[in-house]
Each structure stands twice: as structure tokens, then as C-alpha cells.
Image 1 (cartoon, rainbow, N blue to C red):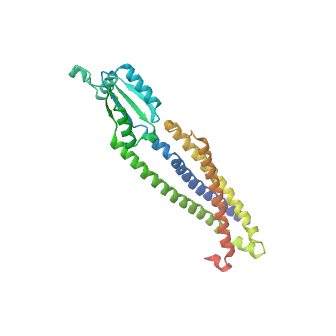
Image 2: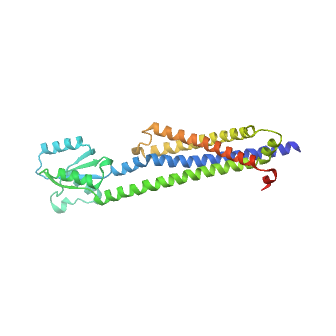
Image 3: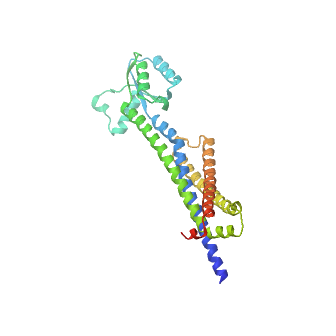
Amino acid sequence: MASSFDKFQKRKLVSSYISVVISIALVLFLLGCLGLFVFNAKKVADHFKEQVVLTIYLNDSAKEVEVDQLKKRLLLADYTKNIEYVSKEDAAEIMKEENGEDFMEYLGYNPLQNSIDVHLKADFVTNDIIDDITEELSEKDFIADLRYDKDLVFLMNNNVKKITFWVLVISALFTLIAVLLINSSIRLAVYSKRFIIKTMQMVGATKSFIRKPFVYKSVQLGVIGAIIALAAMGVVLYYLNQTFPELQLVKEPLLIVGLFAGIFIIGIVITWLSTFIATQRFLNLKTDQLYY
């Protein structure tokens, strides 16, 4: 009978430990994923900004030497990420593929112009800076026109500021929730052993002696939960890097290692602190208060 009861208690204890580990792992995993998003938010925003194209349309009378000099100047400019020369023939082929018909058959000539597509670096993608660039380039006589999507640039920069603000707010809120959830799981685990704590105290055990095995076990559970969370984060990071290689999520390994180390340390610190506070609370309770 006693053996059966002991097995029941052991299964109950293991079940309690598993639930705590799962809770810690899930919370740390979500916190880690949020950290990945926060650290890569600028990189993602920069990626979309660098899709903005400043198109320089050239006069048909532009000399090859002038065009080559312009290309070299653009490549050496601080604001240029890369450039692409699009001839009027290539532009006609692109329009033909997009529209599914050859418009030159109706017109009898090619009305398009040779152009240079300039992809700007993210830090230079603002309306004021691009306007300054277009004003400077428009002084060239062989440049017919310069165009970019002003509304898109304005909305993009405006939305990036809003998203950055709310990401920081949500990160702070989620961190608080993570601490509270882990603390709640640990407190429930310690609560189930409150009578053992009080019994040990009544037979003369010191508070530090009673607290030590609880803290040690909780830290162990925290380490296990953190390892599971980090493994899941590694899978997510690998998948995202394979799916969106242009974002170069693993380009800064030190940042990733720092985030993983931070999540691991957070798992240990929160479980240690939560167990310390929970055991201290039950140690300070009177015997009749344990039933409430």
C-alpha cells in the first residue's frame, strides 16, 4: 500500500516538474522570439527601405561617355547601394512581358527612355535626402527626369517610427508577463510542499538549509526549460534564415549568442528569485495559515 502511495506521489511530483519546465520553456521561447524580432527590426525595416528605387531617365541624345561618368559617380556616392542600367529596348521587353502585348506594334516606335535605377542605402531613404539628391542630379543636361515614390517613402518612414515605439512597449509588457508567469509556476510548485517546509522548520532546520534544495531544484528546472527554449529558437532562426536569406539574420553571430545567453541567464535568475521569494513566504507563515 505504501509502495503504491509512494509511486503515486512520485508521479505527481514528476508531473509537477514537467509542467513547470514546459511553462518556463514556452515563456522563454516567446520572449526569445520577441528578442529576435526586436534585434532584427531595423534590419527588416532597412531591407524594405532599400527596395525603394530612384529612377534616372536619360535623354536619347545622352553620350555614352556622359552615361558612364554618371554610373561611376553614382557607384562612388555614399547613398548608393547598387545601380542598374535599363536600356529603352530592355524596358520595352519588360513592359511587353507585364502587359502581354507589344505596344510598339501600334505606335511604330519605342517611346521609352534609357534609365538608371538607383537603389539607395536605408539611411538615405527619406524624402528630404532624396529630394536633395534629385536636385543635385537634375543639373545634368542629359538627364530628362528623376522619379521615386514620394508617398511610399513618407509612409514607410512614418510607419517604421510607430512600429518601433510599439515594439518597445510590447517588449517591456511581455517581459513583465514572462516574469509573472514563471513566478506563478514556481510558486505553485513550492506551494505543494508548504507542509514539508514547515515540518523541517519545526524540527530546527534553518531557513537557508530549507531553502537550498528548493532553489537548487528550481534552478535545474529553469536550466532545462531554457535549453528547450533555446533549441526551439534555433529551429525558428534556421527556418527564417533559409526562408528569407536576404535579411541575413545570422550575419551578426555575436548578437545572436548574446541573445541566447541572455535568455539562458533570465531563465536561471527568474527561477532562483521566484523560488527564494516563495519559500521565504511560507517560512514566515504560521502553521494555521498554511491551510489558507
